[in-house]
Amino acid sequence: MSDATPPKGDPRQQTAGAGARLARNLVLYTLARLGLVVVITAAIVGIAQLVSVEIPLVVAALFALIIAMPLSLTVFKRMRARVNEDIAIVDAKRRQDKAQLRARLRGDDDSTGAAS
Image (cartoon, rainbow, N blue to C red; front, side, top):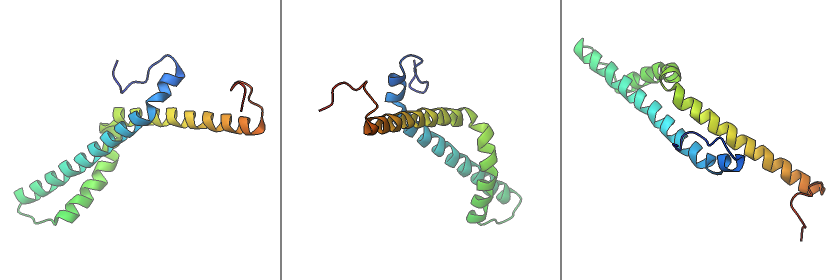
């Protein structure tokens, strides 16, 4: 079983590594998108040189950024889906912890055992 797919069993196991998995997947997705911008920038500059037109690197990078934004949504769809799943897991864990904390503060939670 790879680290990219969350385990189907115990929810505690599923959320245990979700934060680290989210960070890793988010970094990979960000690097992939930046790499796409670099590739498109190089293509714009290369094509411009082939047709003997001089385009400043900043202008080529801005055009590449505009092109890469919607293109990355389709090209990196699987990576984005993994990041979204990890965000959902981490958010659900955060909401659950918040609800447990509020219940303990109200004194409603008897499942924690005898308190000090």
